Image (cartoon, rainbow, N blue to C red; front, side, top):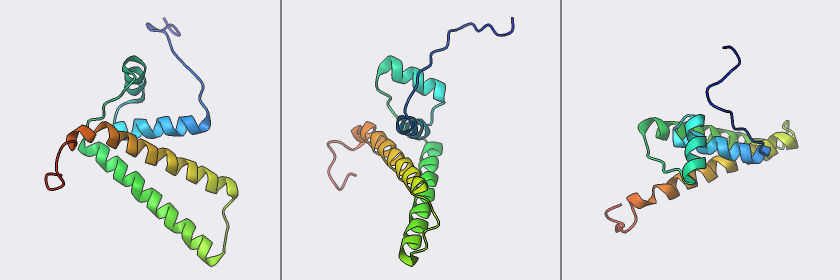
Amino acid sequence: MSGIHKYPTISFRVSPSERREIEAKILVSGMQKKDYYIRSCIYNRVCVVGKKETVYQIVEELVRMEASIKHLSELFLIDDMKISVDEIENSKDAFIAMLKAVFWMLDGAKYLWQGKSDEER
C-alpha cells in the first residue's frame, strides 16, 4: 500500500551548527546517513575504520578548505572584501565542523599507534 512503511520513522531537530558537525562526521565515517544514525544511537560510539575512499573524501574536503582559506586571506591582504560577514561566518563554522570530525576520527583510530614508539609510527 502506498504511503505505509514497514518500519517507523525517527526524526529530531538540530541546530545548524549541530547539523554541520553531524554531516562532517558522516562524511569522514564513509557510512550512509541511515547506518551512521543507527550505529550512533544504538552503540553511542562509532568506530571508524579507514578506507581509501574515506581518506580521499577527507583529503578533497581539506583541499577545498585550503583553497577557501587562501582566497579569504588574499581578499584580506588586498583589502577588497566582496564577501559578507555571514559568508565568512558560514565558512568558519563549516571549517570548524570538518576539523572536529577529522579529530574525532583520528581519536577513534588512535588505537593503531598507541603504545608505539616514534620510529614505529
